[in-house]
Each structure stands twice: as C-alpha cells, then as structure tokens.
Image (cartoon, rainbow, N blue to C red; front, side):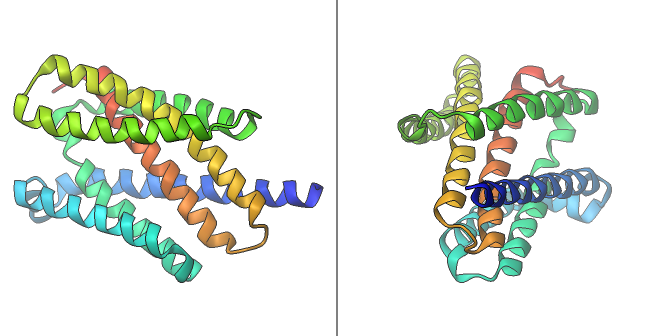
Length: 221
C-alpha cells in the first residue's frame, strides 16, 4: 500500500511539474509575440487567430486520442508545442488588459486552482457524478458563448464568465481526482504518458479559469 501511495505521489508531482513548465512556456511566448512584428501581425489578425485556434484544438485531440500509442517523449513534445501555440493565442490579452491586472488575476487563479486541486486529491467523496454534470454544463457554456458572439450581450457575457469560473473550479477538482484514480488503477504503466495527459487536463482547467477570472479582475488599458 505504501509503495502504491508513493507511486501516485510521484505521478502527481510529475503532473504538476509538467503543467507548471507548460504555463511558463505559454507565458514567455505570450510576452514575446507582441515584440516580434511579423509574428504579432499574424497572431493578431483574424485569420491568424483562427488558424492558431484550429491548431490548438488539433493538438489537444491528437494528444488525447493517441496518448497510448505515443512514446512518452513524443507526448511531452506535443504538449509543449501546444503550450507554445496557446501562448501565441493568449498574447492578445496584453493588448486588452493592463500587465498589473493580468498578473493579479494569475495569482488569484493560482490560489483558487491550487485549493480545488488539493480538495480533489484528498477528498474521499466520489466526484464522478459532479464531473459528468460539469461536462454537460461545459457544452452549454460553449453554446452560450457562440450565441453571444452574435448577440453581443454584456449581461450574458458576465453570466457566461461567472458560470465558466464555477465550472472550471469544479473540473479542476474532478480532473485531479481522475488523474489520481488512473494512477491507482495502472501502477507502473506508462508513467510519462499518464503525467502528460494529466498535465494537459489541469493546464486547460487553469488557462480557462484564468481567462474567465480575467473578465472580473482585469483592468482594460
């Protein structure tokens, strides 16, 4: 039992390290893009932004669907490539919000994310039903967001942002528990791949939580 607990602890450490490194990669990319004129012109154009978004979705699907057929190094490489592309996409926030408010929101996100991830790891409550509900809620959130692209409703926008915060706080706890359960059920099997897919899940939770919180705490330039 102690050996299994030590294994799960090791996997979770790998997950958080990979996720932290990916966040650093994304942050550095986001900071660099505005200072490279050719790259900034592409990333900030409508066509460029759509292209980067499609690449992001493609990489997530590629990693998620093919993780068991990949080597650990390939999975990690694709994950960090995704972090770079996502950083380029996120760089536009520096044109909208002040650096100070972005930093403040990042620390708020880190605190709330950390609290929910700790809860998900240590709670003895089965979060499966909550997770299933949150997945359906996420689809509803996406649909409402698409509707608001055409409606341009500030009220709906605030509601979407509030719901997004709650959904991704819940998903953070659920994903953490899911990663822990996968480690418990598959000891010593594909450590690196498990750490990568776990890091990807929590990375996406963190980034989405950050973006929704930015709506509340970000100061526009």
